[in-house]
Length: 56
Image (cartoon, one colour):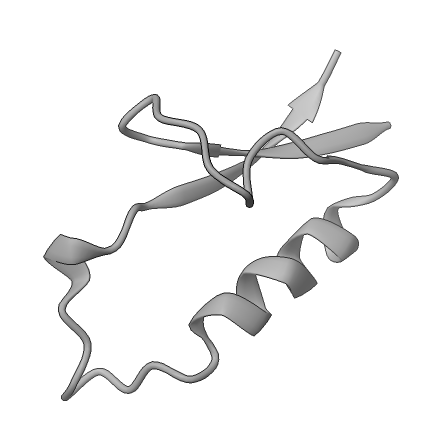
């Protein structure tokens, strides 16, 4: 199975569109992006919401 990352707002950026061989690889990429954010200083309204989906 292959996976990709999409944005909920339908836009594309340097995170979306890449195809991953497994869910864990896609998750690791998102984890790298969000690992530096702390709940107290993050403005989540300014950041896109990503979702990992399975490609059929």
